[in-house]
Length: 119
Image (cartoon, rainbow, N blue to C red; front, side, top):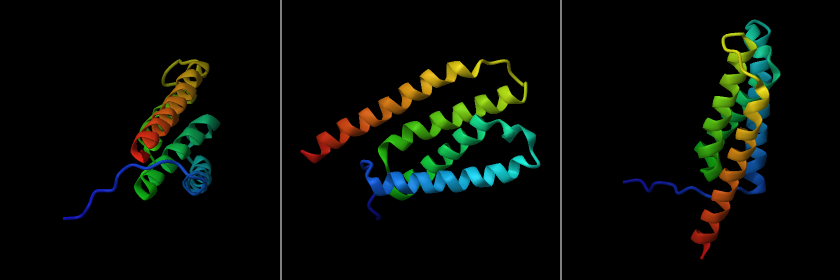
């Protein structure tokens, strides 16, 4: 049987990997936006790219915070996507407190988990 990889903490290398993958995903989504007007909403493509970066980071590095921030970015991206396409009426201002709180909680949990597993 194969050993299951345990979640780990962020390092400069994992954050750099997330940034590069997110940037590449954002570039690809920007190209798709030429034909699909819904992705022209800037925050939608940004959050969707960050969600893709979190998924890739979780698969490669098992960064614990990506389990929380990935779905959070995905939901925020879909909300901005639907709001930009006038499918739902939603003030994008209210998304930001949840995103900031979710990212803060994710890194706090990772920091607490790393502290316990290191000792």
